[in-house]
Image 1 (cartoon, helix red, strand yellow):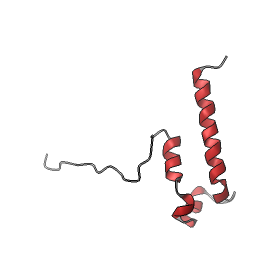
Image 2: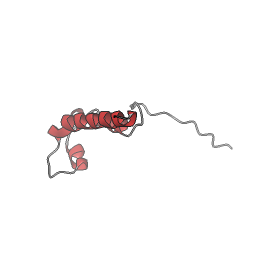
Image 3: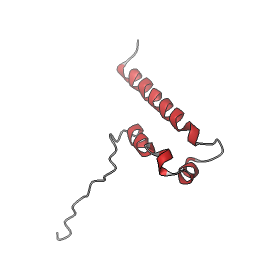
Image 4: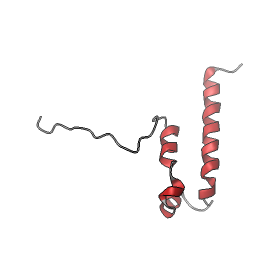
Amino acid sequence: MKHPSDTHVVSMIDVIDEVVASLNHLMYISEPLEVVLANYDEAKVRGYDEVVATLSRLGTYSRNPLKLDIDLKN
């Protein structure tokens, strides 16, 4: 019998497999990810930051970061 948590794990694995398949054409086996991202222009790796945010459960990624108002007078 499957538990609800089992279904969640399977769906997360499916998401990871899709992401790896979509980025696989950018990476060579011998190159670390940092080198790949440094050598390719932004158009080829666009969306990778969104993938990382999604997989790390940060929710949706916004290109416009929040501007925090820090009150330095206190």
